[in-house]
Image (cartoon, rainbow, N blue to C red; front, side, top):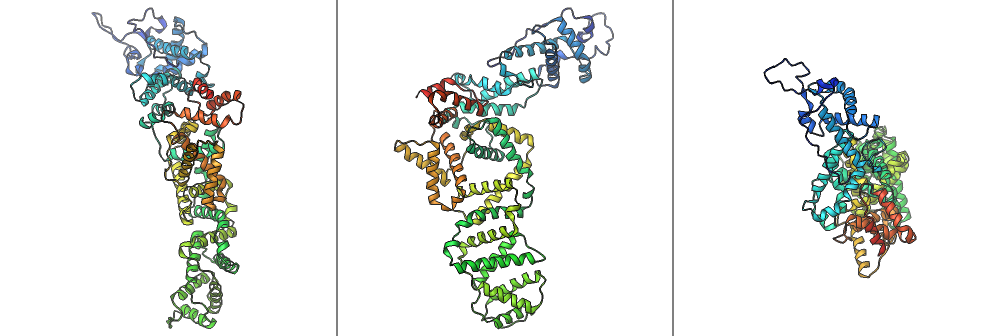
Length: 623
């Protein structure tokens, strides 16, 4: 099939000796001369041979003929040469159904023969290629793309066309073959995009940067799919394209099936609880505060968490956190050392709304009392004496609290979320798969921007989750699956076609270390390089210690991305970089005699639509 061109059929002006049984289907519509006769209804039909639909390989009429004729060829195992016997059998089988489906046309022998010969021609082209036809009897599109792309490097040197024009021409050629042989109209745009997605990896880095194509699509859904692929392949670098596609589908489509994330506040609580659980052990709370100050802070938080549970109108978790933080800020402004009677007097005045002299107390005290009274009222407590006693207890507790600068209040937020999570069993109720997805996203956000505060980290994680979930819900499953398949078939080569923020601190560190090693004439394998970067990054940002595994994964992803882009020579193609990567990594693990077959096997498994030039591999292994 590779290199095949559409067949040319000599035009026949007449059809000789049609059988009597089929004469009515092949009779011409002409009715001229001296002896005009009245035409029968059959004579008034248009011959299918003369219609534009017949000459359009993608029309419903042409596809119908192709499907039916191929079915008959398969059923009877006919030879490739046309005969009267074949003609009679086809007419008998197909004429009734054809007339019902296309009542304004009559089925002609010319149309049958031309369609039959086109199918026979294409079948001859592929019959010696075992992989050209799949187990379902349909053409193997992946094979057709791969084998036709095998010619591209030679054609590219003599062709003056833009690279993507070849992709379009090849897609046209393959689509016509599919229409004729399978009787199916392929999605031309998707087929062209598929061919180009594979063809671009045969181009050098310099050519690829200049060869912009209308088929280069990279929207939000593509970004999500690529992100998922990179995360999976960082853990399973040798995963096959088929298994990769299955895992990505499961991961992406699972976003639509997360009932626990249906509530925005519940998602906010889950994200905050997970972050707090991870960051609490590294909190300055443990080394800045005296033991008695730490106990006082934890008691203050515990008291207000317990009070919220007793309230008839329990606030949402995020609202409760804001309330406790506000009370803490008020507590830091309270006058210290008030006598019990003086406080009782202030409570009494607030309770009965009686104006009294307030200068000695200050506004902060009355705001604190009002807040405490709202909490007590919510619990159904309206007795003045009980309120006075409770407010005095809260006041005494508040006076023991350590003072935290306003710009460091995230220490308090993390502590409150940690306590709240344990009290309400937030993480225990969270399904494992959802929790793992949240934790992965949190880790990535924190690794890429390690200096962001707790609130910013929660915000960015929430935004990423909501955006991705809305994205998957807004797309049709078939559209998502097509994109997943297309990206998975490119394996590691997709690193050439994506972009990361060049200002990422981790990416800068990777590139700096590579430059340092290159200048020193040293080379590290991937695992050694990743370990060295992780060690340096953790030294600068020790709080990332809780995400050491995710950090290693992120470094691997960014290192591989840099390998295919920043570290590449201008004349190297994606294929060149792939082969060199595999050689560098595998030659440390296997004897040289097994190296060639191992790399070839990985190439076939991970890049099923891209041809491997074994000569290039042999030249690389000879170095």
